[in-house]
Length: 305
Ligand SMILES: [Zn+2]
Image (cartoon, rainbow, N blue to C red):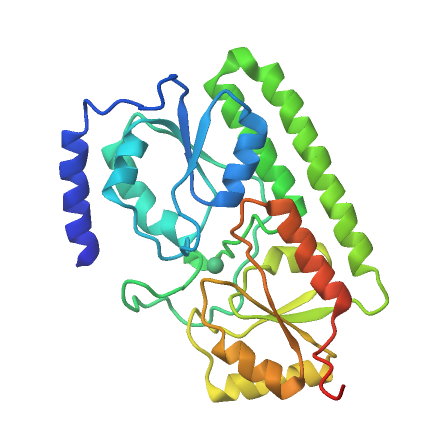
């Protein structure tokens, strides 16, 4: 219901926004992306040729975000939309937004990624209210960007999109794409070095399963506290504690967008460390490395010291 009203507001804003010009002065074309890590990849390649804007702001969940009318104006003034692939925001909003902005060229930056099927999803996806944190629709694991392997594919798709939008500057984009690939490869090798340390974890617990592709890249096991986008039951919590004890798990990741009480419960039970990560950060390389460093330590709180 709220969404329907918002859509009507948006339609009105779009009709009234025709004379709204890009107010940055210089007429740099605007490209929209969904999340901040994508803005990092796109800016790295676009350099000074495009303004890149992420629609989901810092601190908001891309599974449940609703766009503001102001953002719809920005969309109207954009040349292209680079989607990340399967995240909730795009599933819910993108088709409807594109109906209002038929000029917008859309590129899927997850094209050619070997996607994972979300195996935690046994049940059918019933509508659970406006703001459930259910991830991918159709059972596809949507957190594709948290993986150096996938980041290389996202970068390539972004490079191709920019070259298509602005053919003249293709060599410029290629040089920047190439240097981004080197940065990503360097991040990957730092991660591998961290994860080969003697105490490095092979399994970890996370509130919201944002590191599925990271775990696949490096042969790790991710276990999420959240089940089907919902708070865990006492039975699931008990299973998690048993799992941690059986598998030497001392690392529990939480994200700022999610409640950490259940993570705290488990941490207290097994003497684990709670580590806040931000996989939605613009600072993608350092976030990936921070995850690896935390896993390399895999130490609990020193309870008896
Ligand atoms: Zn998510």
